[in-house]
Length: 317
View 1 (cartoon, rainbow, N blue to C red):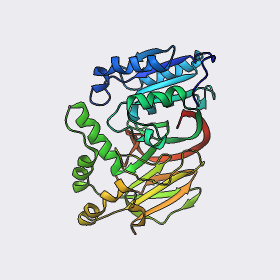
View 2: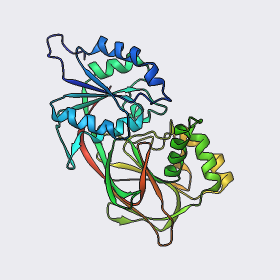
View 3: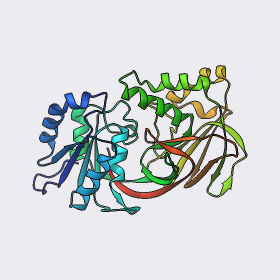
View 4: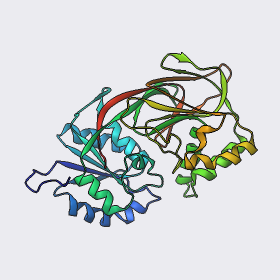
């Protein structure tokens, strides 16, 4: 329901990634800013200029009493902002909420929140929609310096070919090349070797096997429109764990389109499990297996994924 006019305006911080959506966010910022002014009485805004700066801005704002953080960008930007809601592994202010103005090349998480992509309708959600409690994922992994690291995520994390694809997509983006997820997936698959990975879900070991990808899904969609976990819910306290065993080229090309329609789970080499704690590590002799978190390639296995039930407020329709 719409906010009442008598209600005091929320202290709001807008965090903008001007380079998101291939730099279009910067060009459209005046339009976005005018739209925000139409729906929010008062707000501060700041542009990010370097990786992880959105986390710093978000964390500082919340500690200063900000009640609503609005992210303008894609999934990577939103992930950085969400990590700023935490300090010392704990949520800073349980009453602080996240709002999103989708302005990225993917914006997969916004689809799980049912946030419309059009600016005006997205702004209505940011300003008028109630906040819903959703689950958060926490992953511990080995970063590129070989040290144990930790990251929170709202949408999807995965290991295997997904990490390789995201690495290629981001490299292309930095070089201003076309960064279609599907094109990068196909080109990566051609030379990709399936990984031997041990997986444990809520303490139960799965049979040893070779995997193409394993996704730990809080949201439903990743990879710029792929419905990898079509029945996942953001507030059920469980991950949807979708595991894809190794496929030959023809088999892969015949079935990859099914992930976009969400009809892939019936394939005999694809399984769906649910759990709150997932452990994955590469078997002896296996080279580094990359992992990605909400569209960012952050490190390698071994990794432990845990869900934190309903501790994060997000504006949702």
